[in-house]
Image 1 (cartoon, rainbow, N blue to C red):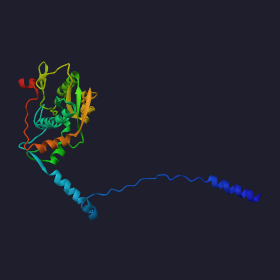
Image 2 (image 1 turned 180 degrees about the vertical axis):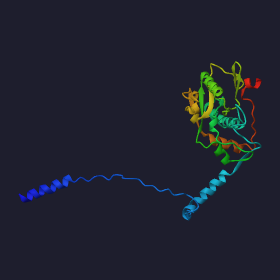
Image 3 (image 1 turned 180 degrees about the horizontal axis):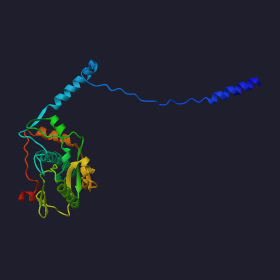
Image 4 (image 1 turned 135 degrees about the vertical axis):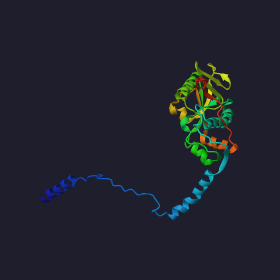
Length: 254
């Protein structure tokens, strides 16, 4: 009986002792400044050195030349850099689209905020292209109805900015509204149009909602940055100007 009572007491003690899980009491941190006082790890430095030198060489490689500064702010409703970006993307993308569909892109449109840097007069390097387009955006072609084109035009007029717009589209804001020509022809209400843009804008980025839910979407698997670099490599000297493709004729008259 005595052994039984002792056994019961031991078992009761064992089951009543619950092991509590560890709990976080506090978190402590220490800030370490990265500066010249920290000695470089030679092993790490030697490992990354060849890769760093290769990247630096590629980034500083000259691929074209511009005789003048190119910026997004040198015009009111168009700019030298915006015209260049839209035109070169059209030139690089249209052969790809045509080979796949047998059709041609009608015009190209991108966003003013997508241009992140200007290009100064002189040599153009790979780094210039990366600074101009640091994002991983890709080119897409959307098929839009004439009603969507009208929404696009109203957006451009309301925004009143120099969005990159290719030369195939000519838009003039007038006293009575606007005059629009696409490939030298008036808007055809019974026709659909193929517009080149980026995958970011196609999903409604920058409030370009007219690109959402198009008739068709054609992904070209071609990054905007790659199109820029390819164009620069094939073009010895960049020639671009403000040609009035988007203008406010009411302002010109006043």
